[in-house]
Structures are given as C-alpha cells and as structure tokens.
Amino acid sequence: MRTICNKYELTQMECDILMFLHGNPECNTAASLVRICKYTKSHVSTSLKRLEQRGLVERQQSATNKKHIELHLTADAQPILADGIAIQKEFAKHALAGISQEE
Image (cartoon, rainbow, N blue to C red; front, side, top):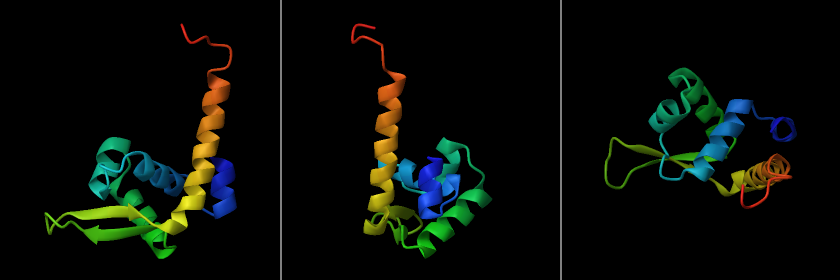
C-alpha cells in the first residue's frame, strides 16, 4: 500500500480508512473506525478532515438519526480504491500460491 500512499500523497492511515470504508460500508462512522480498527480518536479526526478536504470522503447526517454522522466515499476516491483492490488481490495471489483448494 505504500506505493498507493506515495502516488496519491496519502498517509498510511488515510489509505487504510478509505479501504476500510470501501470494504465495510455498514461501518461508516468515525466511532466505528475507532472501535473496530483501534485507531485513536484524534488520528481518525485528523485523517477524516484531510480526506474530506481532498474530496475523497463526505460526511452526511443520517436520515434516521440526526446525531449520527455517516462517512461516504466520493467518486474521486474510486481510482485510489481500484489501485488498493488490485494490490490486495496481488497480495492474496502470492500468499496463496502453492496451496491447493483442498488445503
């Protein structure tokens, strides 16, 4: 993922947050990132501010709970996600090389 971070000028945490939100759309709050990923609140807050400023993430008030702020990936995040998914697939391919389906 370091190559993606360098290519798009992201920190590792920013890249991880984008990939997490993509892979876990039901866990789309800052509190979820803190709880599930074990990040500190301050790091999540700082990273989300940068991602929002760059137009990669949007914060939206929940339609069902006015106190609930949801995080949504924007279309501008799609090229980053595509690169991240490609790297994940390549990693899995190499990690599973030589292992039969029965194993």
